[in-house]
Length: 160
Image (cartoon, rainbow, N blue to C red; front, side, top):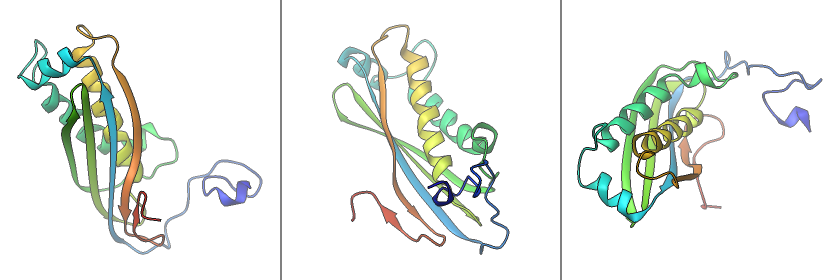
């Protein structure tokens, strides 16, 4: 079982995967997550800046910064030269904010973790920005939606 997990050697010791012989390819990953809150809180942050500033713009910057620091946060991630990080917000229903992060680079390994960390940091920043008015926020459903590039090819959640 341990041999199937790339971050463990045959003896079960953790290791950073050697990507030195892998080809450099264009990589992309898109992750999403949800922040659920009281409808009054949701209306408040949609109406403009709070006492701490524009919630979505601060969260966007936090997501971008976090993606760039993923290798410092996740022990076995490789530092990657990111080409772009895009953070988008949608409000699919009252009281819910959906965060999407799309990360691109040209490298020997993928950017899935960077996209997931970006969504996580953006969600935590939204929480931090509004916790004074809503302590019932819930962060959840952080997941990879799509990735491309590299040996494993193109993946889209739910596509089979």
